[in-house]
Amino acid sequence: MLNVIIFGPPGSGKGTQSELIIAKYGLYHISTGEILRQEIKKQTELGAVADEYIKTGQLIPDELIIKILADVLDANLGAKGFIFDGFPRTIAQGKALDQLLSEKNTSIIAVLNLAVDEEELLNRLIKRGEESGRTDDDPVVIQKRLEVYRNQTEPLKEFYKKKGKLFTIKGNNSIEDVFEKIAEVLDRLSFQAK
Ligand code: AP5
Ligand code: MG
Image (cartoon, rainbow, N blue to C red; front, side, top):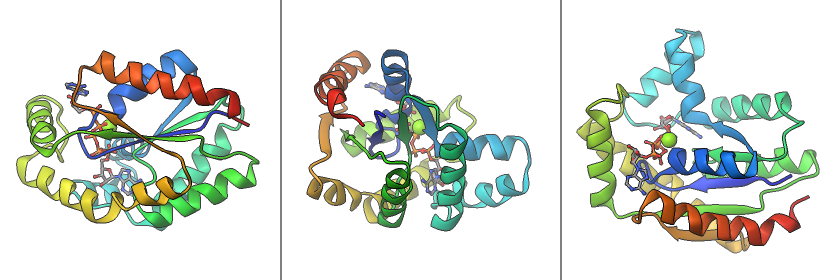
């Protein structure tokens, strides 16, 4: 399996690049943010819980999100590979993902870290907020999301660097240029996938 994590702060282009990766490599997309937004839309119990965290820019508790992820993995075991978008977001989630994949005799092949400066992130998200309808694309909540990223999610870079799996890609360039760099990494590594 070709299992890839697309990593980076809010607005760095994880969703945008995931679509291009799926089109080229046929991977199954798991965006935990999308899953939660669907639950909110369907007005489920989980959606009601998620809404409270999302609209204030906080992370959903690890236990809850790990369970959701485990269920999605189990339901899609026939996939050629997965692209994890927005997961893991804490060290605990990273460890859980390693465990879940090793139980299936597979592992993460690369963590694609999209590096974008904060000013550009803010511009992108404020612009998107004008029409996205996302409750968290609000200037105050965006600041909170960036803070949560720095405190809780960024330490994962070191976690994956130590494993030799971190590939940093400059995310400020055009969507096409960023994807070209991603494809270079994936083409180089895909033969190692198991
Ligand atoms: P999630 O949905 O994962 O959001 P996020 O990480 O904050 O990131 P975004 O989706 O806003 O940005 P993105 O990196 O996908 O960028 P995009 O491609 O859209 O999470 C939302 C919330 O759900 C969390 O805050 C949390 O509450 C909860 N949650 C989710 N997962 C969780 C987990 N694992 N644990 C706990 N809680 C969890 O691009 C952004 C904009 O920029 C777009 O308008 C796009 O068109 C534009 N753009 C993209 N690339 C470029 C480029 N190269 N040049 C110019 N513009 C670009
Ligand atoms: Mg996204």
